[in-house]
Image 1: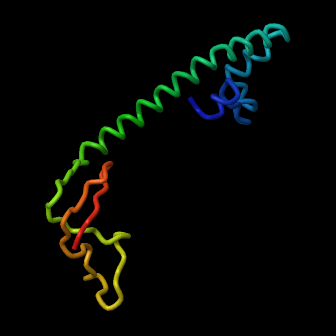
Image 2: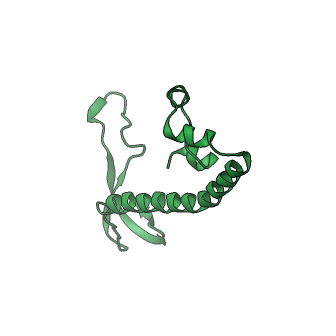
Length: 124
């Protein structure tokens, strides 16, 4: 479904279709006013179903992307007393004088307390 069709309930009519008299345009011109409005109401009723189908497809696509991304993510948990290195944030920042050789980690620290949700209190 195109965004236009999801918004207005039918596909956009291009100026070229009017000039060439496409089958869709020829069919519309043959309808009476009451038949045309009845056809538009049917399109509106079908629009809700197509919007729901489109939303389901979007959600399925997002879940597929999430699964592909999360395959590479590995959870790490640490215990109290372990020695860890702390990342210098923001990543990619450079210290004057070091240039691209700037360190990305700080001295080793000891985990003093586990705060939960992946947060730790560090000790020198």
